[in-house]
Amino acid sequence: MKFNIAVVPGDGIGPEVTSAAIEVLETIAKKYGHEFVFKTYIAGGGAIDKFGDPLPKETLEGCINSDSVMLGAVGGPKWDNLPGKMRAENALLGLRKGLELFTNLRPAVIQPALKNASVLRADIAEKGCDIMIVRELTGGIYFGERGRSEDGNMAFDTEIYTVPEIERVARRAFEIARKRKSHVTSIDKANILESSRLWRDTVHRLGEAEYPDVKLDDLLVDNASMQIIRDPSFFDVIVTSNMFGDILSDESAQVTGSIGLLASASLGESQRGMYEPIHGTAPDIAGKDLANPLAAILSAAMMLRYSFDLTEEADEIDKAVSDVLLDGWRTADIKDPDATTWLKGSEMKQKVLEKLL
Image (cartoon, rainbow, N blue to C red; front, side):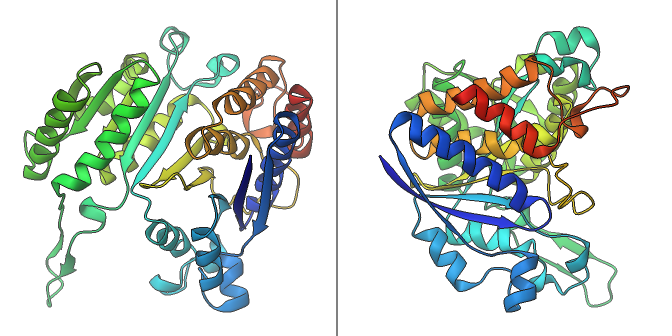
């Protein structure tokens, strides 16, 4: 099978980690008889420096015409003081809009080899954590009407959701749950917010009509934030709004013990998606071969699973990462506090490749 993949390395450590992910995908392609054709595009701070635009037209068009997109990370202190529309991070918003990506998937997994790295109490971490957070990405308060009064004494942001917006992200959550433990937890603030009441009504109506085989329950967002700390093993798939998903996905990431291992996917109606690690550009370690490539590699596995339906290949990458960690190999970000040696980023990539050969 042949797939065209747009690669947007971005800034900071982005080029380093995307390069590692590409090598892993090339190894998988050779092993399973696929063909991955990679074409690199520029976006973010580098694009501002070169073109005066964080998302050049050629980059957006190239991504739209690809089978999927691999993103590194964009932004950094160099571009933080630019006007809003010129900020490097606007490349992300432009790509999401142009690719019509309305769902963000953020897995939060405590790797068995890294239970001691979790901030959770040992007996809680021992029970494990394997949560898939399904976040609505293009609606809600982040995209509603906003403004300030002329005298500056009042500001407002508006939370708006429509039934179709809720249905499409809920449907994605139910479908994913069917391939996991068939349990969806919908998170809202229905005791206060009318938009959350519509959210809850819509999710339940859809679940009862189309997914009676999937267990569905609700939690208010404040209670959910506590339960993720108290017993993350309770959760399977979480579906929630843009703002709540933004907050809870970061909380869940902290529970796992390392941001350097966390992948993500942004999806729309088509099979094409955008896949990226969540660790950011880390400009302080860029170019030093210190960046952990595992989150980018796991993001590549998500691409195989959700865009290309190559489940066996994705599972092999996931297992390779897990096995490398079980063997005791660590990069600087996940080493034990007392450790005096650790792998460089390129060395960690090589350990994963060895597992795949």
